[in-house]
Image (cartoon, rainbow, N blue to C red; front, side, top):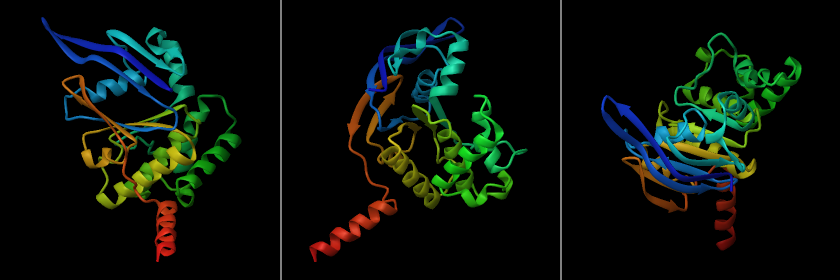
Length: 247
C-alpha cells in the first residue's frame, strides 16, 4: 500500500455557508497501480488530488503515504515531501519557455543540489525513455503538444518519485496524441513499477486505469476494477504473436 485515506473531509466557508468539498472518503492505492479519480467539474476530484499531493490540508481525516501521515506535516516538511516523493504531470505542461526541453526536465534535480552535469545526464535518460530524446535542445514553442507533454512526463520521472499525480494530462491533446500519452503512462506504471494517480472527467480516458474511484459531490460513489489496454508496442507485438500461434 502506497496511499491510505481514512475519513477524509475538506470543508470550505463561503460567508456563513459551509461547503463540503470532500465528505468522508476512505480508500487505498497500491504500489505499481494506475488509478483514475473520475468526476464532473465540481465533484471534488481536484480538491482530493491537492490533498493527496500535500498542496492543501484536510479539515479532518488521515492521508498516509508510505506510512507517513502527511496531514500532520508542517509546511516545510510538505515542501520536502513534494520535492522528494512526488512527480506532477499537468494539463498545461507548465514548461518554462526560457529553458530548452532538457533543462526543463533537469530542473527538479537542481532543487536537490544535484550537479549540472549529473542532472542533465539523468534528464537525457528520461527523455530517451519517453521518446523525445531528439528534442532535447528544442524550446517548448518548437514542440507539438504531445512532445511537450512527454517532456512533462520525463520531468515528473526524473526525481524517481514514489507517486506521480496527473491532473487532466491529455486535456489539451487530440485523440491520436491522447492515445500515445496513455500508452506511455501504462508503460511507465508496468515497466518502472510507478504508482500513477490521474484526475480526469473523461470516462474513456479513465477506462485505461487499473482502478477508477468515482467522485460525486465530494463522496465516493463507486470503485471499479480492471482497465483496458492502450496497446503500446509491446502489447501489440504480443497480441500479433498469439494470433499467429492460434492459426
